[in-house]
Amino acid sequence: MSVNYLRLIPTDPTYAPPLTKDQQAEQLLAVFVPKSTEITSHRYENIQFVDAGSNWEAIHCPGCRAILEDDTWKDLVDQASVTHFVNLSLVMPCCGVISSLNDLSYGWPVGFARFVLQARDPDGQLNGEQLRLLERILGCRLRTIWTHY
Image (cartoon, rainbow, N blue to C red; front, side):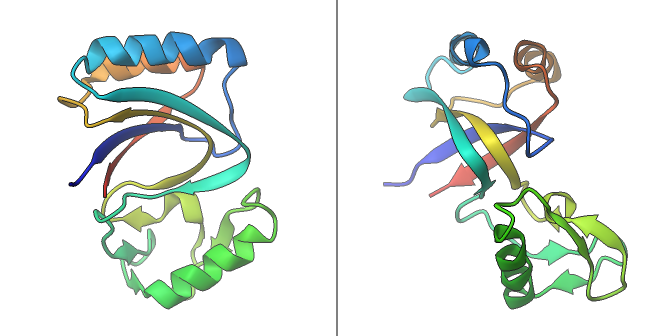
């Protein structure tokens, strides 16, 4: 049986909203996707990679659009893991542009975060106003990640 997650993470990987906002954001997300089977939020001591599951596609350089090979990407992730992903900056091996692991052109959005708000098997997508309301509660801009397992 497959499962889909709607995951919302801060665009700033180091940001974690005030603890008092988690439950409020979960309750509002539950209103927006009422048929979801589970609404949760997760906080991590260190920054984590938030993947897209089987939605994973090719990674492109934001400078020259060259495809970044999976092994090269894994090496860059391994280097960043030494700092617990606090430093995500990198120089692209293809063209030398300075970027961040968080800002590469992934086929499906992914990201790095200390906080994740998620809905399991949601019954739809969030519209712009709903996303802005969640951003207001959490005090940050959010990135939407669709994960399929």
